[in-house]
Image 1 (cartoon, rainbow, N blue to C red):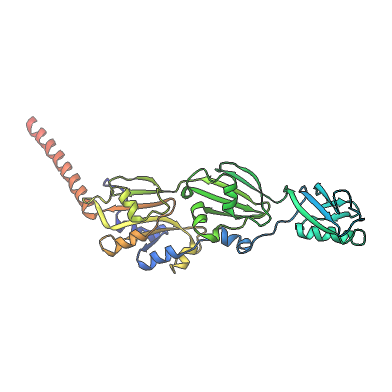
Image 2 (cartoon, rainbow, N blue to C red):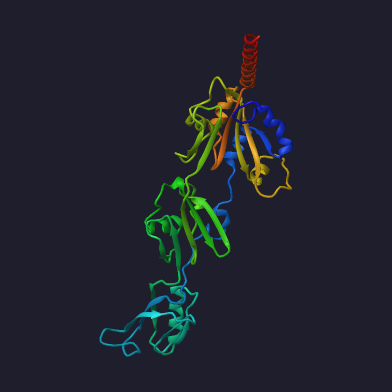
Length: 356
């Protein structure tokens, strides 16, 4: 075999059938389709809490402050301080109940402070003089979320009564340790789990979802990378130095095409593509295959318009950009090998003649 770096363009195309991978020629429709596709993120996976503010409710272990007011003197709660009394630090017991004088046990688990106020008033009807109640949550042990990973201050964080969005909770924890483009957010809610890039959460409001009681949030530092190989000046693994990197920018980062070697018609982006994206692009593939589909996007840089396509074709994490050698380069290598072989034969012949 002749020494070379990677397959030729024609070989990639010929081997696509037997190796069961797709070759997709990049044009305006492909670029628009890829850029317009919205993957399933936090907003779609947890859509029940996307469009409204959740109401915080009281749970076991929460500490409440209850104040009862009466309309006139001489009532149950009248005294030197007036016609009211405050009951601080009332803990919701394991049964989800609290007890106050003259009220008996009141079931408060799952109730809002306003609902608990109504229950207190109802329990005092006929006993106190036109009672009114005020209930506040002093310490919230139940309505909390857990935040761990690459944040400044991991721990348990209580949710305010008005609710809180994902970025609000991250801010309470001092923010992420690393850049948003290098940080992923994993949110676990019951049996559901969703993952999203922090930068996407910041830029797309529907991804900045309301968190719910008991949510577990984990931030992880995972810089996105891509590889550039083949007939470029600096083949290597590169880290995304911006939120998005185009195929054209990736080639430029690798020093550009090697003019004497590169096949400008054979610029390829290797990717394991999501079936949902291929369906959205109306590209047929072997649907028997489970999981992502090995796909090669081909960009013909011989055409001027393809530079616009390459500029708009955004790379994803773990993509590989490959620039194949020109066919003439391979022919030149073969001729070089033949010249070396011919020269060696000539040298041997000359040595034999000297012995003669």
